[in-house]
Image (cartoon, rainbow, N blue to C red; front, side, top):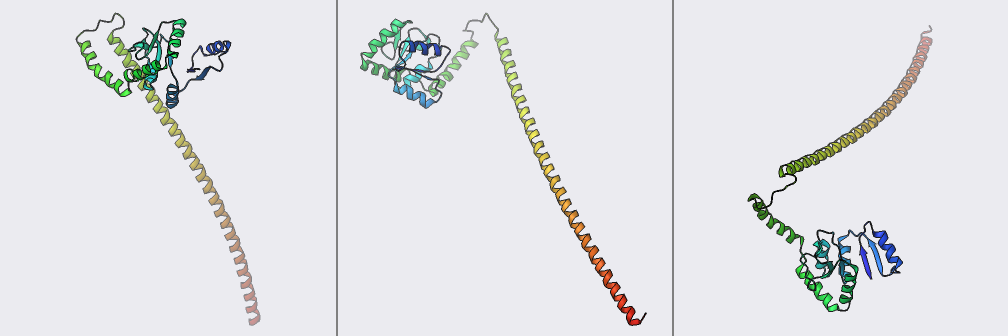
Length: 250
């Protein structure tokens, strides 16, 4: 079976073509895969990696396949085929369908060759990120020294000064965007704090009014009680005065 991992503008056309050949059960289209472990699982499950591209400038997928001991079929002379020796650590074809079909027939009849080339690819083509970064880091001093010594040809196009100015302008633009984003976040946080403050004030006023209402009710009840007490006191005083008047026979 052949498994297509990924997408692209021609995906629907390729699917339709596979269906027209009656290959629905043999040509699988799983779409883009972004999970690293799942991608590695596809590499490890495969017998061969087909990458007949002449447009890719960096054969990263070829290195990924090699890391899993998987040999690749590549177009001879393409950027993806850099460091690949046909029949040793990969398989090289011409840029046509007939050459690819012929190579697949040869590989399919020699499983031992397929295994050996995959093992060689793992030893010779695989490059870890640590090694890739180290190689680039080690190369930079030589490139800078050659540039300062004038060993590189002069550019007939845009001057270095203009390019540096453009880079500085873009850097300033990015910094301005970043400051604007932070300012927006600060304003948003300020508005949120103001909203919370107003909410707290509203709750405080509501609680205060409720307390005032309860206090007024208590005061009203107290005044009513005082009024009743005064009325009772006046009645008792009247009764005492009447009793006193009778005793004095007034």
